[in-house]
Every structure is written in C-alpha cells, then in structure tokens.
Image (cartoon, rainbow, N blue to C red):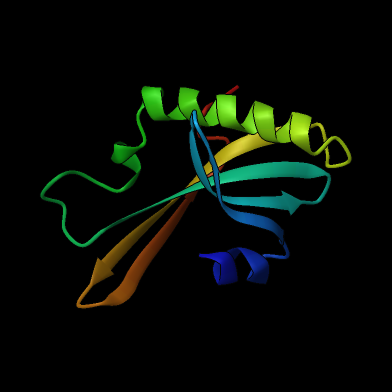
Length: 106
C-alpha cells in the first residue's frame, strides 16, 4: 500500500512503527498533515470487511501511538489523522482498495 499512497502524492515517513502500546503500519505526510495508516486485508467476507476489523479499541491504541510519534518527531506537522486502507484480495491479486480518511473521526 506504500506504492498506492506514494502514487497519491504522499510522502512516506515510516513503515511498521512499533511501540509497547501498539503498531502503526504506515506513517506518511499528505500536504501539511501527518497521516497514520492502518492497512487491513481480507480474502473473503467470512469474518467481515477489512475495515470492520479496525474497531474502537484499535483506533484508541493507534491514537496513543500517534501522539507518541508526534512527541518523538516534533519537526513533523502537528496536525494529524488516522486513515484505514481496506484491501480485498482474491486469488492473490488485489481486487479492491477502499481508503477511509479520518477513520477515528476526531
């Protein structure tokens, strides 16, 4: 999904940023905003859509990690949000990509 975001003009800052509070798949800049991206993929609807796997608990964890990231990198934009990129895969090929902007709604 890094390629997908870069093609949208985003600047990728980091991948798989881990702390004891959790992990963020992609940290990127879109214009003057820092974006923390959770990527979820599913090959079937058996367990719901990919975006349904990103629940309120996961978003709260991501918010804590995002706040820590901002403190650790004070020269990056102070304005930030959390996005979810939902990927549907069939037969090993990406069939659909849904980008949910500002998924936490804050």
